Length: 496
Ligand code: NAD
Image 1 (cartoon, rainbow, N blue to C red):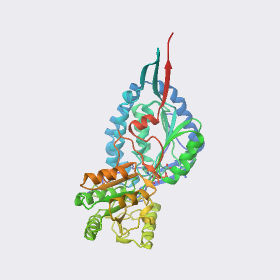
Image 2: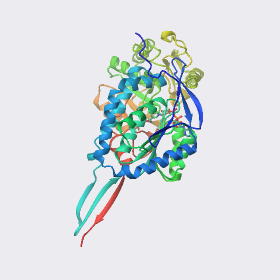
Image 3: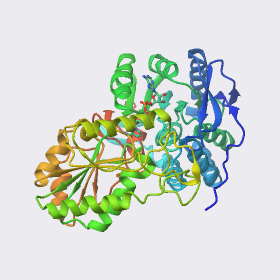
Image 4: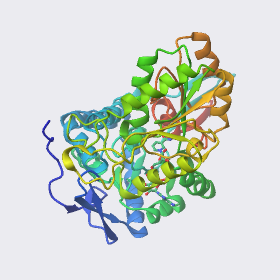
């Protein structure tokens, strides 16, 4: 099939969006490279602390009026944004593929998930209501008003350039706060485009700001006295050692969503063909660069035939995955985001071999369809007989690597899963309700799948994890996000 049109045609230096103006940064400029073609598609500034401070000031100044804008009026801007997102659905999806490498259908899914958060936030006039108790004492009433807090910082990762900031921003602005977003500098074009649409939707200057950059901007956000809270999505070391303690030190509320190592428990009573088909998208979709990607398949039981058949079927299906540039609709897996991420996966393949796992499908030996440079590509990789405590079996690889391991029974599968430090999205595959219920009850995971390989919560449910996958209390999306972005002011009143 022919390649879909690339929406970014000209290499431009991206600008920050501060106080309703597109402003050139004085920071260092770095290239954003399409990982499938290895062509530079844009240049992004690594903004300075002063530029962050200007954005926070604009957001703080805008807050006073924005807070007084009625929820209904704020919602109308979100409805307008939703229309623009629909009109630009295909363009937004192609930008994601062009800058990240994921397949176009994966990008379309990402665009849809982002829009759904705008749709949920459109319900803010009712979702943000407080509650009242009449006569808490004689003639005294008490009520609670969810109130916005001010400026919030939003920090995105590279793997979902469009959707992840939308887990936060629609709720933040719908509830009357203002935001400063720092997109991942690896994939900044999607958020640049989203801010253009927000501008067109009519958000007043200063309500929605974008400052491109890296650690300087993040460090500035953590310290800034006018930033009330931060939502962060990224790796565990940064969430655990930088964001969470940084917010604690400066007294900010925080949602820090972090890394993962997701275990799929395969019961002998599962629907085998559907399970294996589900495994393909879960392990290899987005080239394994999802926090909800499956990493380990734990095959339960002592039946060698069942295990061997499972491994053989997985390998047969995985080796037929078409790898290439995601703007070709026939492609099923794109590249890793950059050369360093590919090298990281290659290192883990070496580690797995040294640890004694069986490499039953070698992702180093594959063909990139369409003749694209293979700098960032790795093919689907499958290890069998993996020790869950080995590095390959326990650490986040964030690439298309499947580790298959065995457990003698369901209890052992749950024990193996729970011993891992992460707890983001574990799943069981079974046709037995009692097994499913036992698993759901005992597995320690923020999200649990039952015959579902990617446990991505809908926008009207909270999304977070447990253990080393999450630092904070409330989650992004849905009612949790509304609580995170508001304080519950309690008023007690009597009249004489
Ligand atoms: P990352 O931690 O490298 O970067 C995330 C953000 O933090 C980026 O904006 C980056 O510029 C900034 N950053 C990086 N290092 C920093 C530092 N030392 N100090 C301050 N800021 C820093 O993560 P990534 O590689 O962009 O994203 C992949 C990771 O995100 C994976 O671990 C994945 O599991 C995780 N993730 C988690 C979820 C979730 O919901 N739990 C969702 C998506 C991705």
